[in-house]
Length: 520
Length: 86
Image 1: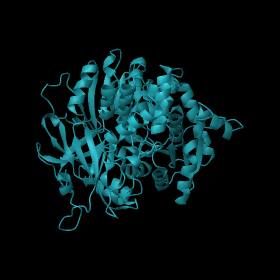
Image 2 (image 1 turned 90 degrees about the vertical axis):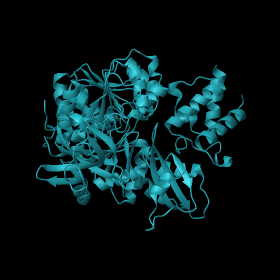
Image 3 (image 1 turned 180 degrees about the vertical axis):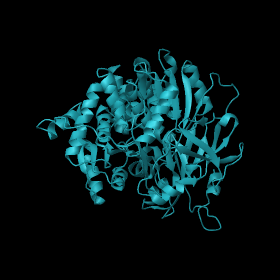
Image 4 (image 1 turned 135 degrees about the horizontal axis):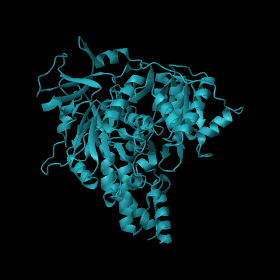
């Protein structure tokens, strides 16, 4: 069942299974049927049309993960507009930058965050319409909001838009090396080609119960949202607070009989280490999917011992392509294995090759950059034509997205990840440009020089910041952490700070990162 | 265990585990631990495990919220209320 537009998955399932449960808020237990979710998102569609949102516009989402934010997302798609989700807990200035950069027409925002966001937008002279949902006075803030703003009643006006497959569906902002996030533009075809591949691999049906752990601004959410809704299954929305609480998450997995779990390895490790997942053997997991970072084999082995009946897939892909290779972890992991598993073979909906700096194919067995072409590859970066063209290699065989990931192709077309060719790192599944951390810290009035480096450790990637201060004294660690909390998303906060009188320099007077890597 | 003892114990643990090298006077009873990024989610879990062990209390998953743990003063109040109810 291939669709032209992503919201058709919901519409088709609503016709087929109007009474089935589409989504559950795992914390509160609130749920919504397919018929209700379809109707609620129709109301969102009609309301935002009335305030002037048109096809090809962008609409921001700055809401906690909830049934309301899910209905908002579909309402935006039904207008033919693209949704732009952000981390509602991220610094308001960063979110305002994103919304301004993307030129959103309107923003759905949690009431308690509306005023600070409005102030930050005003500083940028941006004035999108803020649609404020208040959880403090209603467990159904969207219905309450719609009832208030559409006091005359919302008659369903007309049909949903039928955007073409190459129309923009969502823009996901990722860390940018220049210090500001950049918007990855993804179309309906980008999303649906991936969703259809997931159908092929997972063979889901209406009895499946999917986790939705990743926030909506993270590309893992595309599987979580659209795959269950395509098949009439149920998605369990795991919000920010629950998502950090391993004991409660383990209970949700068992008590709600989830059948498909998808998250970063860090979250799975947290579940095994702190969630007493091993104390429960009553779960129904048939697939455990992970992506976003390397899964240390030690932790993966423990997880497999706890949930031996599930199939384990390592999914790999940057936001620009979403998942493009995958590897099924064997039933038994050799006792002496410590090397991480490969990222695997190309998915059936993409073509993959390994190229050198000039775009020439690299012989099998040698390191090169993984390049991807096909239906899921992004349109480009929002408003950044030069960055977009630099990200692609174009030749007679097509338009290839250069992932920046250095890989080796082994037997059977299986790729093994070897590292990055730039300063991007992945931690807890999030992409982090070390330059964005440095840019944020340079804004601190007492700091004169900053360099951030990443180290791979057994527990994952850690980020260390070296800095020099204007008065030569070390800053309070509390002050540094506080400054980061207010200027960077939580996932970018450095793990370590080290004060230096001056940072080491190369002969060309640049910061000597190689020297810093050797320090300690 | 009185409030002062709990505060001292929590402060010493946070300084030692998560703020190596920090001057103790910079960590006050009202320093915002979670909202100011001093404790991330993993650090919060470690702190909770420590409090459970050293104060002889059991903290339910639902109680792992910033309202209970966002400052040393809040931690002391929370631990005392747990001790009183056991």
